[in-house]
Amino acid sequence: MYYSKRTRSLTDRMRNSARPKQEQGYSKEKDLMSKQWEKFPGNPVIPAGQWGTIFDPFVLECRPPAPRFRMYLSWRPQNAIAMTESDDGIHWSDLRIVLGAFPRPDLREFHINRACVVPLPNGGFRMYYSGQGPDRTAPKHAAIFTAESRDGILWNRIPEAVFSPDGAWQNCGVMCPHVLRDPASGLFQMWYSGMNNPGIHYEPDAIGYAESRDGLVWETPSPDPVFRAEQIPGGRLIKVTAAQVMKHREFYYMFYIGFESHSRATICLCRSRTGVDGWEQYPGNPIVSPDKGCWDHDACYKPAVCPANGGFLLWYNGRKESSEQIGLAVLRTAELW
View 1 (spheres, rainbow, N blue to C red):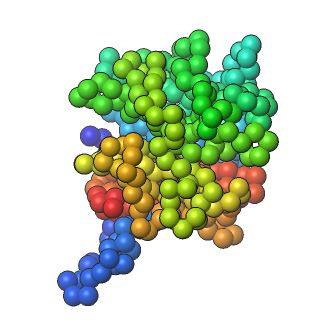
View 2 (view 1 turned 180 degrees about the vertical axis):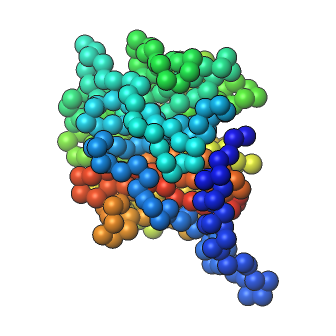
């Protein structure tokens, strides 16, 4: 596995700043404190600057000789999905467009965003992404599309949507795909977001689940979402969306956006043994929150998580007013829970 000196120095600095656990007086509260995600002090790691609004990162760890991390993100001024690379997760190359909007007759790729890239067993890659029409309040305005690539840079679109809205809770659209491929069974698993709130708000409402043998033809085991805000005790959130799911040991861990209001969002964590039901909320939620007066003052969106050097790196897009930029948070332990 490829590691850079700069990545090691980042995680080591975070780890060395921790106070060791004491045998005497150890408590669950102290354990939660040891599992805090710490924002990188040099955030944002990809500022808007010359790029304008950038959002919804997805990060793939690559093998050498390529740079260690490859990020796909949404680039609003260009209405495109762009790519950038980094050896350390902090310093990133200039943005490069890899997929642009497509003038379909049904207009459902008028806007494209929220990409997820899956390595295939043949050595290529498949990208899943959201395609949306110009009227985000129209029924069935958003669907999930896919493209294929040999190198993860040059992409060929599949002509039609691979997953479209078909149920009451997702009648307005489906988007924000996150796909895993089980190496043992070959099964593709997708967690996606659905919405049925035309004219109310453009963000999805809840998270659904689908399966596929080939990654192109999908079936939903249940007509209902597998995770929604109403499942969370206390009524703190009004909607949940944009999941990234990671299989880690015996659990599926879901990182997701939790909306406290239509304008304020945090990043939260839950886990399930099946990846479909029995979701347990992390007691220290939210794991990443807006900081008053900072670049992410209003909202923290769309987590992208990778294990790194005995811990985890989490990239996200933060928003202050209309500006969105990419930041980084670090967990300095191998234990997510």
